[in-house]
Image (cartoon, rainbow, N blue to C red; front, side, top):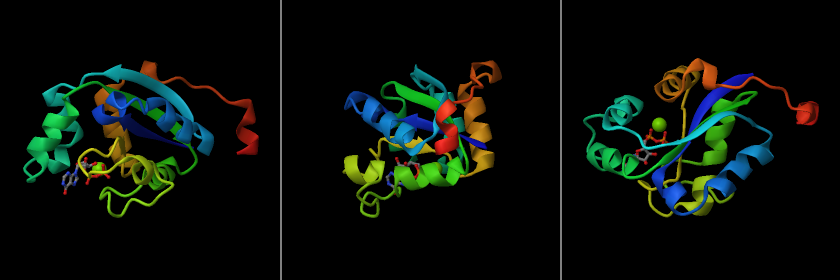
Length: 147
Ligand code: IDP
Ligand code: MG
């Protein structure tokens, strides 16, 4: 069982898509183990997107991601790092297929609604950037045997 960091970006919060995005993840069979609405600090955003600091789109990304609240979450499931990225869809909106969250709801690459960790290593670092260990809730869903 893996855990990953998923975050509804400010556009998803402002557009009222939190519920629909969370539904997609629930319907897939994943389990939310932590979630909170937060306004990212500049320092937290630079740490979260450390690999992109210095790229041409970074100033816009930093401005966007700190422009309003985000809904930060930790989700659990088998192979969830890979599977959640498929559910989210490709970064470039021109490549994000219908059926994926970005494919269905995002019309511009910078405003692509949701973040998902790209590896297990990233997920650990990103989770620690938002949550204390005791904020993650361990529980079993009785339906899990059917998923
Ligand atoms: P990801 O969110 O699919 O992992 P990354 O390459 O890690 O994509 O980029 C982080 C975020 O930066 C993207 O989700 C998107 O919001 C933004 N971004 C990435 N590439 C571009 C670009 O070429 N132009 C504008 N924004 C971009
Ligand atoms: Mg990324």
